[in-house]
Length: 221
Image (cartoon, rainbow, N blue to C red):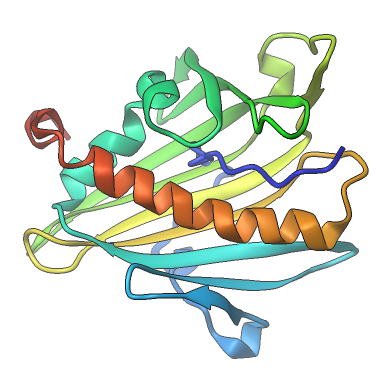
């Protein structure tokens, strides 16, 4: 089955690639680059665009979170606690730290389809500004570094994305979430795309709720 599931994520939680230059930050939704508004409200605007050689779409969401970037990043970095607050997350654990990246394993359970799992390499970058730190987390698959495939669990082969957290004043964050993933299977692309769009809104809701926990305001950068 084919189901677009979100690691912050995917979640949809990790970073990817050797990206990270300021000129490459995933914070724009220029219509000239194919981005179109897919859904939006006062909390989050979700954009999509076609992806080469696929009916599955890339997604980028931009929303405001009422907390400093350091606290929001502490929530996203609390991956071992994901099963307690991130949508669909059954398991999430750290496998290895390597320089400025980490290797993590995640298993997701969407209930209406078979469980999915994947191992990701996440790159983390941060830099200071007048209103606080900007954080950039990017990820891509690293299944060769994780557990072998399990019977009854679909292995995700494509999952690329990023979280960009920019200060919007000292106590508010402009969060940009980008993802392109294909979990394989037989569900039609239009259903998978719809699931991704609605899943992103749930992801933002989860982060907004979790960041209210005072423990994240105390986490080190």
